[in-house]
Amino acid sequence: MTTQPFAPLSDAALVLCTMLVFMVPLACIGLTLVNAGLARSRSAAHSTVSSLCVLSTAAIAYVVFGFSFQGVPGGPAHALAVAGKEWNWIAAEPLFLRGLRLDLSALSLTLLLQIFSVGLAALIPLSSGADRWRLGAICGSTILVAACTYPLFAHWVWGGGWLAQLGKIYGLGSGFIDGGGSGTIQVLGGIAALSISWILGPRSGKYEPSGGTTVIPAAIPAHNIVLVLLGCLFAGVGWMGLNSAGAILLSGVHPSRVILIAVNTILAASASGLTAAAVTGIRFRRPDASLVANAWIAGLVASSAGAPFLKPAAAILVGGVAGAMVPFAVEILEFRLTLDDAGGAVSVHAIAGVWGLFSVAALSDAGAQNGSHGQWLAQLVGVATLLGFVLPLTYSLNWLLNAVYRQRVDLEGESRGMDLHELGAGAYPEFVVHRDDFMQS
Amino acid sequence: MKLAGLLLLTAGWVIVISAIALLPSPIGKAGFVLAGIAVEFLGLAVVTYSHSALNTERE
Image 1 (cartoon, rainbow over the protein chains, first blue to last red):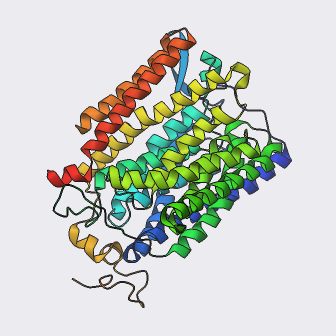
Image 2 (image 1 turned 120 degrees about the horizontal axis):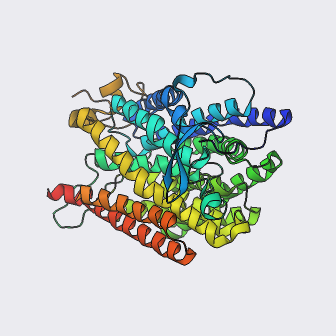
């Protein structure tokens, strides 16, 4: 079966989209810097090399397998008949991009955007697996994201799949709306981060029982907060490209909305960062730099779904709520649920991303022609699919990978640091940053 | 525990998509979608509990 493609873009719009797509790698650079800065100094080089390996593996796996499963609206796909209605569930494009002409067409730009987007999604779990995730396992897990989970869900949302068709088939608003990827990129990456965090377990010494039943997690601070904050600035620029190009190429939004999208993106991030500064300032008597940085990213994440449809005041509200949620989410996950998510990926990408998806139904008029009730249901079905299908699938695949190839480094490697253990050299060989950082055991 | 939690997550999703595909009335759809999501949250709680660092320590 095939679905309807979007309206063709003018030459000027294609040039604009090309520039926007070329901005997206800045988001990947941003997340790389954030992950490296939040890791321990003895794992900083490993974190950065891992980011390069993730981006490379994701690009190749997506081109070889992923794009053929994801496809584009109007392309060939397989459908299941359920109660007399057709459910488009997977694309049927050829492997290795066979037959695809790579020129300045919307299809080619969509492919390029997706190569960067899948890399961005696969970078997210690096944050939660910091200081203990082996490089080989990182590449294996990236293949699972780029070749399986991401293309499948992205087809349902952006490739004319059943989630996108909920409006047409069942009258649920305009179907599941995710303009720039709050769900498809961020929540999916956050879910992978949650699975990795569960499978790897906490870092050694993070949760040491102190005699009683209560365990207070050890604080393992970021080794370079300047890198983290610089990464946030890069991410802000990259996200403007991601949200704009995604909305135009993947959701069929008119290119004239590009300024609105950029304004909403920056407003959401700004509101989120400021809210987190205020919340942590009130709670801890001074703003917490790493939580403010995390909240800035969370604002960008939450803005992605609705940036093309929100009014600027609503974008500020979206960011403000995301920024207020992040410090509490990080605390609950770390203290109550004892989840060692080193860089806060689950709070920043999964939880803020879900809020972004709901904000489309709550604060925008997208899908209002069929009643806001229908749009709420469509967004709920999308979130339920992430939670009830993508999470079990991601966890199971990574569990299988772990059974074949142990994902966590051994205790000796963890105590020496990932840099020395896996790369043979540290990120800062001329400086003794921490007493035991480069100690040969 | 982990398997039970994962099965609950999947069962919740099956309830959600069955409601969308099979129920004609919007109120029925909404009710069952919310029920399915509640089942998913139950599954998430079970999986989270089974992975708790405190549980791991005890084991």
